[in-house]
Image (cartoon, rainbow, N blue to C red; front, side, top):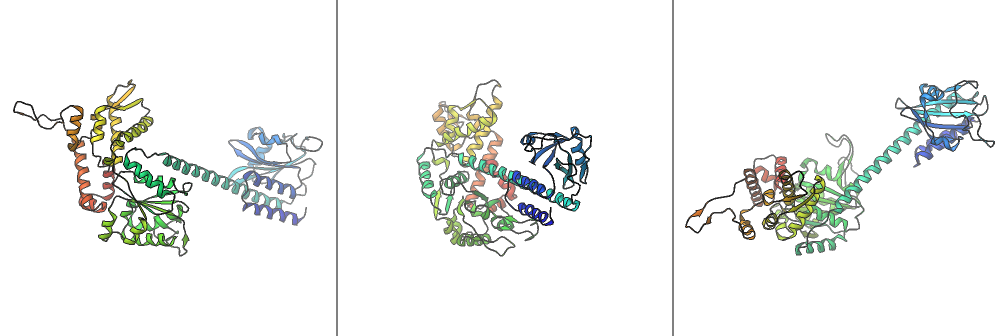
Length: 526
């Protein structure tokens, strides 16, 4: 053995650390280097797992060695090596049984080991496993250079640590990829329910614009399903296999909008403890969905416009421009032309976003689609709750059809969820059919009461002429919570109309914290 061979082996192992090798190949090459430098006929790398040493790589031992497990308490030589921080060599006449006896491959068959030594490997101060060297000739290890052996021990520890880290990162990356794919599959699996002319027209619009890379502005009332439309556009595009990144512009604090969109470097501002990629970087090659884009403050609109015009972004704290390839889909429940006229939204940004505007119809314009959607939500909840068959009774169907749905699809989903829980609570535990009644829904609306009464041949609860010249003032019982919710819902809708959809101004008008206002809106299905 020469010094040059030792150095060449060291360099080869160090070079492997930067190569994209599999864990098995990386460790196998390490053992090959050990045999090239040190006089041995076999070498093995074993990892400690729950009081057992598991072979990860062997060189010179029979193939079946990789299928074995060596319990530490049953193999005193391996236990001695594991407990020592120094290389351990066993005398040729040692009475301790050798775990590899009969496992070394030679041309004449498997022979007993005559010379044996090993070293323990520690990672971050904890025992990781052992590296063993075995020879058939007595005295093979008499002239080993201990300095070189120590260097190899440290390099072996670095190699197994690198292999562990790479394996862990690959596993994490695979898990995250599976999670992302699962989320994308769940989102893409959500169908657009409806057979009305309005929905047929919407599907044609999605199909038309989906195949292009044009910016799309999705307009419509709160709760109509603008996010689902964005998902469908993405799925119809050539970017369907790339990411669809969602940004809720209304929920972003004004001082963090730029960081959220474009990213920042470590130390760029107070609290920036590490570098972070922005949404534009995450969506590179895919689609960026800017929900509630009308809520972006005027100052941040200019920076967003520059990114859309140039296709370049800059992280906060970094002067280097990054090129990004992103398709923009935006959504809003505001009337942006009015916002432009009022000076609250930039005209140039509006025109940049609304290259292809799409209007999502409110639920009240979709006629009998409400029953199809109700069936979809009922089946979702039935599966989640493990319920038997669930159906709507005729009165509840009529109620669904005549209600105006100010909160649109979101309100319908919440109403169905509440109704199923009420029906479940009111039904017998052994019932094979859960029936949702009009009382379970609790969505009566004065403007539709006459339609409901006519369809069901019952009185609506309004004052009615009895034919005796007297007025029947009997009314149905009032549910205080439902009446309060209805009042709050109508008040918020009135204020949203009055303030052109500006939610910040509405929350101020109601003397409410903005986050509490959002939670109230969500609870009311708005």
